[in-house]
Structure formats: C-alpha cells, structure tokens
Amino acid sequence: SLMTKSEVLILKKLNLKKDISKEYQNWLNDFEVQRYTEQKYKKHSLADVRNFVREKNKSKNEFLYGIFLKKNNLNTHIGNIKLGPINFTHKSAQISYFIGEKELWGNGYTTLAIKEIIKIAKKKGVKKLKAGLYEPNIGSEKVLIKNGFKIEGKFKSEIIYKGKRFNLHWFGKIL
View 1 (cartoon, one colour):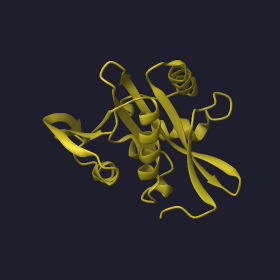
View 2 (cartoon, rainbow, N blue to C red; view 1 turned 90 degrees about the vertical axis):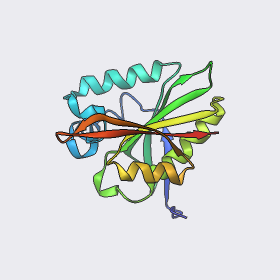
View 3 (cartoon, helix red, strand yellow; view 1 turned 120 degrees about the vertical axis):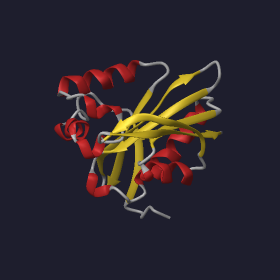
View 4 (cartoon, one colour; view 1 turned 30 degrees about the vertical axis):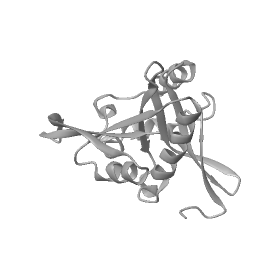
C-alpha cells in the first residue's frame, strides 16, 4: 500500500479564506505543472483563483476538491481534483486533476485522489467517468489505467504542445 499510517490523503472543498495561497496561484502559473492543461494559456492572479474556487463551490454540477496530504496533524494542500461537469440526465461526468507540488510527483498521490473521486462520483449517482489527456502525458495515462479507466477515443492532431501537433486521448470508466 502507498500510505504509511502518518500520511493520508484527503479531498476537501477549498476554503476561500485558508486555501487560496500564493503557492496555489504559483502552481497555476507554473508551466511545468500546467503543461498538459489549458491553464497554461492564462496568467492567474490571486483574485482569479478566488473567483474560480468561489464559482465551483457554488456550482450544482462541478465539484472542486483540494488534495490535502495529512502529516503529523497538518493538512497540506498539494493539488486539486475536479468532478464535473456532471450531466445528471446521462449520469456521466468528467474528471480533471493536478499535483502542484512537483517534488511530490511520482508518489502515487494522483492515483489515490482519483480513487477517492470515484467514490464521490458514485455517491452522486454518476455511472460513467471520463478524462482527457494530451498524448505525451504518460503520467496521467498511468494513473487512469491504475484506476480501471480504458482508452475510448483518440482525436488525431487535436492539440498543439510545444509547437507540435499531438493527439488528444479520452479515457473512460463505467462505475
């Protein structure tokens, strides 16, 4: 198992007072963290971050959670995971995620966060999840496969990454 007793991952809604930090803002403006997302095209101010979180916290079909590492009674915000938009008619939803703290990459935290978001999705009555990724994003592909997602579609030459065209892959999981 990936977890030691003193180290647990929890997902929780972000608190507008406590969790909108300079670190969080920096993750969104860090090309390496956001290189496989659409966030890299914007410059994010703290006000932007606060507005985004406020909007998601009010949303009825998008649920944003901070990924927190629980260590020695301290909760450290290390990234985010989002469930939604949920289509309640079809009981299907998208997920997206990132770990902002680069020194924590490769520790299995995204795998665990996805495992948790699957439980939350099931509680909300979701029957089908999907996640899109840029073809070079091998890390994301691995964590989805570990959580039982399968490739469902390859959109040829759909995106530009570092000046080259790449395929966009969609993964799905029936819950």
